[in-house]
Length: 72
View 1: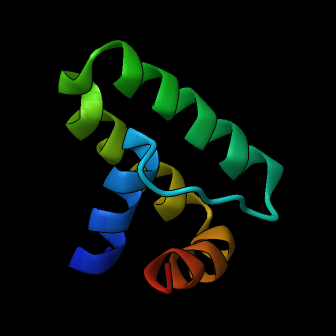
View 2: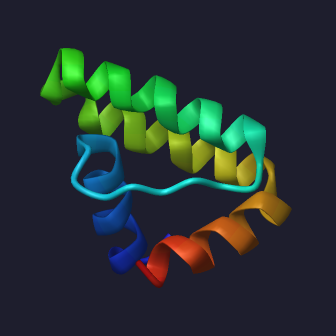
């Protein structure tokens, strides 16, 4: 995951950017991570790691969504 995507994902998790994926599972993961970060901002790095693991497990989702997130 490149730096632009990481920065945009952090903004999405922090609520600064809005992103909706065509993939329901990825949307659910984003919502779950946003709630964790809102409850405790110190969870941001752990949430980023969990998102990275999800995207590594599902490369088709990653290919489409990471390109869209980079374009935000």
